[in-house]
Image (cartoon, rainbow, N blue to C red):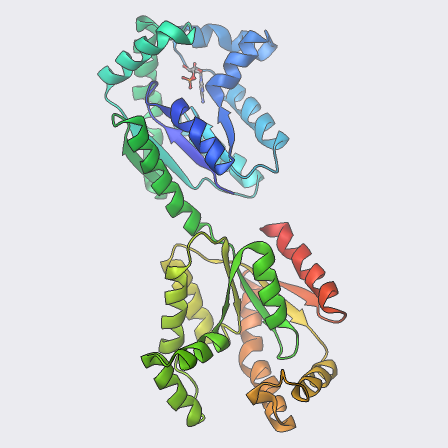
Length: 385
Ligand code: AMP
């Protein structure tokens, strides 16, 4: 979900910018002012209560605001995200928004403040008053609205500055320039919003083929360190040459090399929804590295999945595979297969246990056809993505 609050004095251009934002990012628009005006036009009880306050340029009660926002967000649980305009308007409403986001199991990505000087605000609102038909777009009420803004609304900024999700733009710039500024902020937010999955399973559990298919289905980038290393060797890059030497000497590839490759992948992937990691992290040390890498990119692990297959079935599958052309160089003998299973048990199972304590691990029954297992994993991802 992408949840944004547009902030600024009356006349800052929040409504104008909202029009393009809701179209481009398919957000559900919540303008408390618009909702209140509709309640007044419909002559509802709530509208009658709010009417005189709005006419004088004051702020309506938090009780009324909570009622209308709660109703709107609970009626639209499938929204891609929400765009708030005119809310939160008081320090208390910032707390209220936090609570409402918790209820939806989400959070506000950022509050974007469109900064405009008071004189410019007044000028714009008087201009708008000629055509808006809004009774509160007249000089006396405008002055009062700005007074309310300075006294009650500006302190909201402190809340978001403290939280570290405050962004600001010069609202006096042209509509197009402000629009570009907002887009840049949102692009940054979306990259923080990546949905990252770590896919675990013993060798032979089907994690590789499932990982590739899942990445395709959910628009994720598949990150499998094994094939990434192979690719470097094939391309005969400097790193590839180093890796080949290590392989030839039967040595493990050091974490530094793997980290560099993952980092390159994280940096070069644009416009994706997230990553699906397979074969990494394999050790506790690597799990700390991955957490650190993702954190550096403002991201984190959203879901950890383990495909479970009984040991005998794994041996049967790996043995069968070793007799086909899909045989991997590391599965050519029983002793090699047993060694790989043991490695997983000794080094990777503790990683899964760590994640189980931290985030919980989604366990998937890996028996059955490819499609059956794919269906099971997809269902679990769909619940969260
Ligand atoms: P707007 O369309 O955002 O300029 O809002 C018009 C009027 O609606 C304001 O001057 C307030 O009287 C009222 N209003 C809108 N949103 C809120 C809010 N979050 N809290 C209190 N009053 C609000």
